[in-house]
Structure formats: structure tokens, C-alpha cells
Image 1 (tube, rainbow, N blue to C red):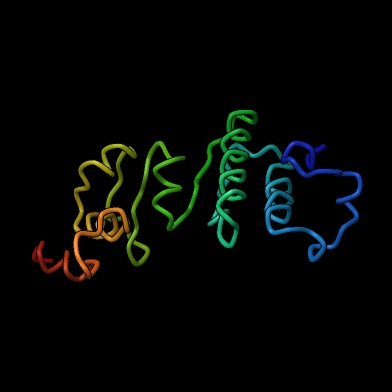
Image 2: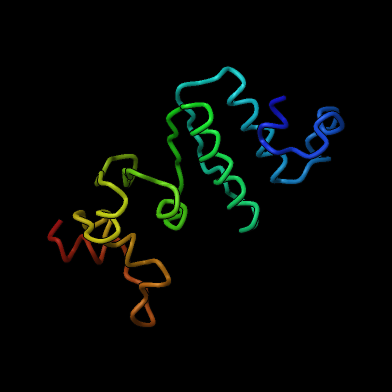
Length: 146
């Protein structure tokens, strides 16, 4: 039943498979099935799309959003991929060296970041590149006098 819920094809066959016999996306779906087996109120997904191709990444993110809705659970998504943040998050906490730098709703964060680190992070995205060199975090902390 859980394999069906997470979109694993032929669940009656796949249930007997070893991990090395499954694709990366299928392995991730199995992990999600395990995570939702106890009907949690909160699901913490730490880098759920790492090492997956773009198509599978989208499928996994769509699945997480659907399960969040279907199961009525909160979802904390941990990622370094700002594209994933922009597409899936309502609220964002940006961390640097394990410390919270900024917290905001996703639109505010992308439109008007308040923290120098957040500004550095967003300006380092390829679509914001203005020259030959991407800015570094230390560039922004120096500008901010930190």
C-alpha cells in the first residue's frame, strides 16, 4: 500500500528487490514510504533530491508536496538548492555554519534578502551573475562590515 502511495511501479515485485536493483528515484521513494509508515505529523526531508536527475527531482518534490497534503503533515525540507526552495517552500530559514542567518517567507527572501550571507547566496546563483567572477560570502561580509 505504501509503495503505491509513493508511486513505485509494480510494488508487489519491487517489495522483494534489493536496493542495488532499484533506481535512485525508486530508492528515494522507498525511503519516503518508510518515513510515512507511521503517519507522522512532521516529515523532515534532508536533501531528498541529491544525486537524482532533474526529471526525477521534480517527481520526488511533487510527491513530497502531495503526501504533505494527503497526510496533513508538516514538511521541513533541507536543501542547498535555491531552485528547490523557490518552487516548494512557503517559509525559509537560511543557515550559515549551523546558525540561522535569516528567516522569511519565500517571496520576501528572494526579493529583498536582509542578511549579507543570504544576499551572497542569492547573488551567487548563475542567473544573477554579472561578471566573470561570482561574489563570495566574504565579499558580502566585508561590504556589510561584519
